[in-house]
Length: 329
Image (cartoon, rainbow, N blue to C red; front, top):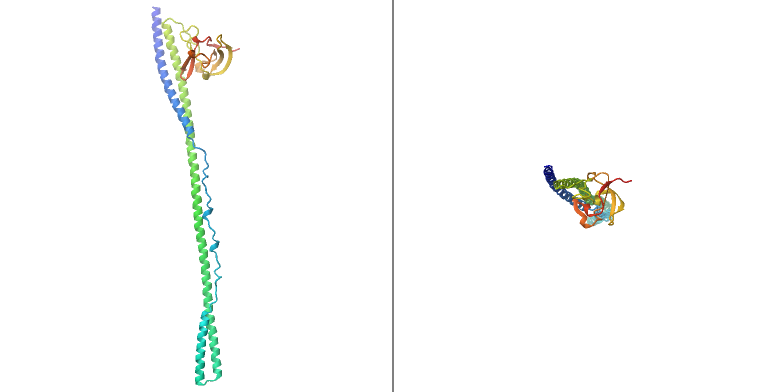
């Protein structure tokens, strides 16, 4: 009766362990998939970061927009002339009038003194007329020169204003383009850094979830095997996260080098395998110092691939090294 009870209890224990192992393994695969996706996105975010460039590399010299205005500056007084045409015309008219007057005096028998007085009066009249005309023409020339000088000044100022606008607009466009490049780079960089940090945190979180699920899967598998052992009358023991040692039904252990720290070579087995003392990085796999081998140094047939997720284990029933907890002297 006791044997039947033991078998029933063992089967129940094994079934419960199998169910737990299945669920934990499913969670482990889910976490591993999410972790790998986060890792891919993290690497993609890093690779897609923009190259650092000089936003002012496209700045050009705008001095070509300016021109030399010295050719527009002239002396408007260079061409001033004294006009004699009016005086010559008036003198000619006076000469004609004088000749006519002399003819009249000769015909009328007038005295020579009257003719002389008439000639003097005509000469003075010519001088006055010529002086008046020349004064007006000189004044006109001065006004024309002033007008030309004013026009030259205004043309130079207008050209300068036009060039200032051209150069100013060119500088504004170049500065805006450079500032736009700086803004875009800074915004893109900030977003890239945020993405990298987010995916890194996701990767670490999913990696931790995967380890936790792998540990739960290993524990549930141990429970299942222990239940089977009880059902068939086997004797099982567990050391840390290992499932069975010595004459146990199953003797798989976490023996991946990546899971360990403070690794020290302490001996060699009869077959030449290195025997190490080590501690688990994650204390959930066992606390204290342990003795064992490394999964990358044992024969292939003794390696249990992906024993806890992405880490390998070793079937110690196939090597001549005992896995056990030790105390270093």
